Length: 468
Image (cartoon, rainbow, N blue to C red; front, side, top):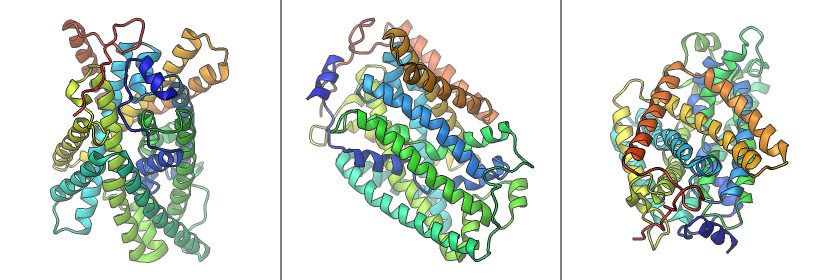
């Protein structure tokens, strides 16, 4: 009841079903991040970090723990869907919130398309008789149906998938550990620190790639209106997911780094075919283990990971639409299922179209990855600023640790990573932001100045979503 009253204070009704517990949030976050995610991009991070792949993931965990802390502060202040869009809009100003939502759309809208594409390409390689477009259609169709049924169905399916991923990971860790003990690898700490290749800029550039494996912990905040036990659980779930996933990422990449068959060639030529991790798995356990890891990665990205990504994207569209900053038809909620049905269907359609187009480009996966990472990190920077503005400046909080020091450190670390990110990603990301500024100017020109319900400096515009 208290959570419903909080929503009412901002001019909204409780429309989404509150059915998720802490364990559901943790499972959701782990599935979104994919415990075996580094298997797909291991070669790129290895080459980009000069072999210090475990260090790149360790720095990523540290950087994003500060971000999770800032999320926890803002979700307690504004317990509603919308994530950075709402936190920046209500913590700083509605126009800033619009731009933050626009930037993170680059992450949320593109992520499902990337996941479907990676999975479909991998499955096509395993089963050449089935074309990429058919795999895409199958993955999108299954996930859209499950997500349209309701959040409990999504939670149940993703928990089952999570168990499967963890089993595959456990098998790899056990077999790789045994291989190392049997002398089939090269025991070394170079994956954490190699004095011959180490530079901070090199590590930062690799972290900007490795961040792709971590994206998803923030999607937990999109479920603020669907959790049963209060918003405090959101922050706890984010921290738990980051730590758990970080440990798993570091362990599997360290072992794989010691089993890479030709490390010098990987550093010199990169991982053109995306098979570096599976080559290392073959050294540990033969072609059977390599195939299991490859197929498990493809299924994990194509079903549970993209399924929860679709959930997060639809909630962001729903939140912006009910504030009339996107077309209002996206705010329609199904009476029977208590899900934003139009936003869910649109996310599936966009993901399919994007995946089909990018499948025709040689650089499709690399282009999507760089754009997604840049959009997410810029949105996280805005999140840290919103904590300081809302709590320290507006509310004159005396908690300097939580509302100044922690977000300041998080901002500094992420800014360092963004500055050292791929130049093409920087240019494309800034172009997307510039387009958002033009859209914002268009809203002002047409008399639709961004405004959020319940904010004293703006007219209430947060109408209750239309139910269908």
